[in-house]
Image (cartoon, rainbow, N blue to C red; front, top):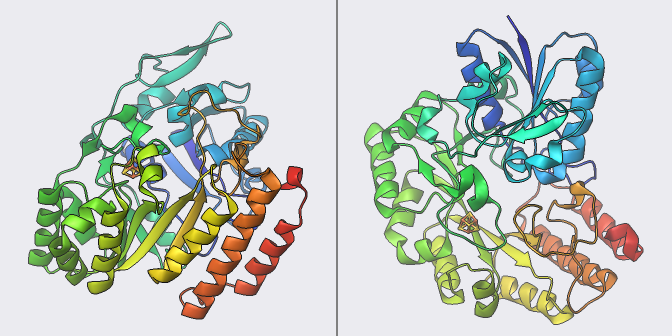
Length: 440
Ligand code: SF4
């Protein structure tokens, strides 16, 4: 019986790692665990987001034959470090997968890597482990050269339910803000929209694939976890699907609290759905408002308007749903754009706000000139391209001023009482005075 170690690295090695604030259940590893266990493998998960030991200490006294590691772009360095440590300790088979490997498999064509799986075809992993190489989405080495098999989209319905043993072993972890131990569930792969900045619609070879509603509701019903994070990139896509979901939950009398993503244009056009969803337990709606100007929304290919965004804000407020309003800070921002965004947030009294720095991810953006080659900087908290109108240092100056104002507002609103506000604000102030090359 082969012993397989499934690994997810930490989100960050800086202090901005969201540990204890937002921790994501390692759903993909749990799918793989379910598949491999069915075939009799001995499977262990190591999620550095919640593990307190170092990876090296964890593997020191144990024995494994196979390593599978997943990562996002900003975790590339960490997962490769773990693959190297695994090779040195066991000389076993190393397979690299996950979202970054889907978009940029060639980033993993390294000494410490044996195979790269750039798709969701996890059901092929038992065959891959046993030596089969004629598998779609698989890259491997032959005579010293890397060979990549054809890419293929995966039907999400081909996957079993995840094995949540690891999640339930950590009942005090995996929060979403004030919602403790939030179980992740997914009804679809990829996204039918094509927003220019977004990596998600490139996943699964850009093919949208969705589970049946009944199967999704069955999975929720059979997991007693109180908080459910529907992690689809856009759950509020198909009106009929969402209505059926709400109806099934209601009919079966399932009592849960939900978090999910939805587009502002859908919310603006479907207040009745937001109301009904709130009545069955919707707490947080995560929505990319992105910007406060229509020309920028157009340039992002968002297919949405500021008018819809404002309707969305009102609908969430009227129906008692907490809107997590997400904005992108553009490379074309001038000082007044940061100030205008803050005024907008105040004017609309947005309580939950997340701001990301515009980040053209490796592998999806063409003709981009990066100012860093450090993958850990692609975390949406760092500039990876030069701003158009401001120096890097001045752009960061306005950015940190905005963060400080948002944190002070959140503190006044009393919404993140579990955070050490003072600590964050002090560190933002320190960052303002860093040299340009230290921030970039
Ligand atoms: S931003 Fe949202 S709607 Fe746009 S492509 Fe990404 S997931 Fe889809």
